Amino acid sequence: MKPRIAIASDHGGFRLKGVLIDYLKKELGYEVDDFGPFDSESVDYPDFAAIVARQVASDSAQIGIMIDGVGIGSTMAANKIHGVRCALCWDDFTANNAREHNHANMLCIGGQVIGDTLAKAIVKKFVTTPWAEGRHAARVAKIMALESGK
Image 1 (tube, rainbow, N blue to C red):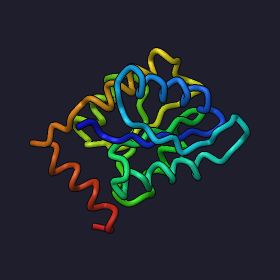
Image 2 (cartoon, rainbow, N blue to C red):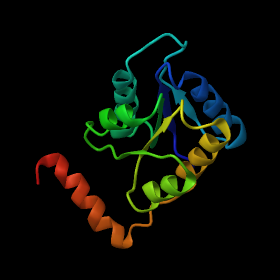
Image 3 (cartoon, helix red, strand yellow):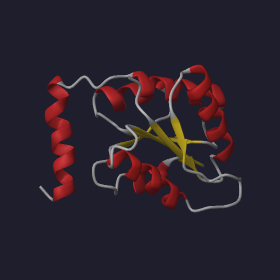
């Protein structure tokens, strides 16, 4: 069964969000929940990154995707939500590593720095790459332990 995907953007990623929703639904066959915004008016990216991150943390979605102008701020905001491992990816190598090695459950993309074709490749790699576990499991456990101050 394919994972459910939660997606949102800010105004800087609004156009690319639409492209990626169509790609995920029509070409890759995923269930996608769009958490806004629903126009290109200026909004605050931390609000939308938190909405997606909370969907992932509650397991309402198994993968989150956030698109803002550059991706840095949303990645920072999402990683404040307990249980979220959000990765800013800029090519399919970083997307693969984020999933395979770091068990990332949320992806951020910079809509003003990544073109449509590359964004599709990043998203496809992110949503289709399984976690390798093995030697990486202990490292991910250490990352998650940081949330509880250990």
